[in-house]
Length: 214
Ligand SMILES: Nc1ncnc2c1ncn2[C@@H]1O[C@H](COP(=O)(O)OP(=O)(O)OP(=O)(O)O)[C@@H](O)[C@H]1O
Ligand SMILES: O=C(O)c1ccc[n+]([C@@H]2O[C@H](COP(=O)([O-])O)[C@@H](O)[C@H]2O)c1
Image 1 (cartoon, helix red, strand yellow):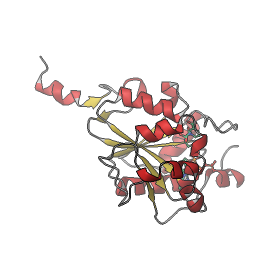
Image 2 (cartoon, rainbow, N blue to C red):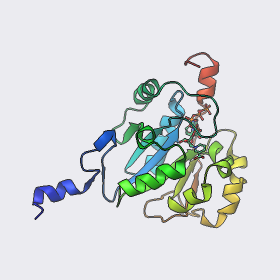
Image 3 (cartoon, rainbow, N blue to C red):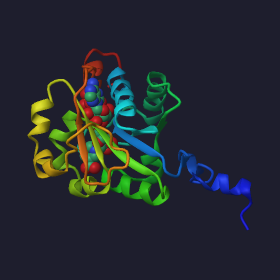
């Protein structure tokens, strides 16, 4: 028989955060911000705070990718990207993790599938900047992603029009949340476009200025 104390612990999954995987509580709504974070910057922190505030999220996990499947360039070593990300985003609601390296996944569709299996009862929301919606139809099994989790798209300078008229936006137009930006309780397919004061920071600009290893 499960004791009262154990019942409390059972709400937390995975039970002991095994293998460095973060612990979540059943019923939580967790935003996933995947990225190269090469390096992390104020733009990432800005969209994370906005997503937490506007979308009804309990947590955001930054998934520092072992390597974007569409980018030929190898990013800086994982420990350095993790350390920089933790310095940029120091908030108890945000977990910086190398989960994809631990799971052995690269394609977002695979990562989401694995996370939903490992964390039953947890609701995931995929987050991305508007520039990623523009080329989202080039991602592996992009329609499966849209059908498996709600997606929050955050405005980024220069990408608004292209994002709104992108292949993915047009294909899933009827699933765009028409009122507000709150994705809590939404069932996929559902996505929102968050118009907000924008931050122009980018990793490539930081690298171009020689402020980060290339
Ligand atoms: N300033 C920003 N405004 C809105 N979204 C952003 C911003 N910077 C990054 N993002 C989003 O954060 C996620 C991770 O971005 P990434 O780590 O690739 O940074 P980046 O600045 O876009 O890098 P790069 O310049 O090398 O392409 C992506 O979904 C991206 O769209
Ligand atoms: O799954 C894919 O095919 C895919 C293609 C391009 C990008 N992604 C993911 O999108 C996220 C943003 O990548 P980036 O390099 O723009 O920061 C990151 O988690 C990548 O793994 C995923």
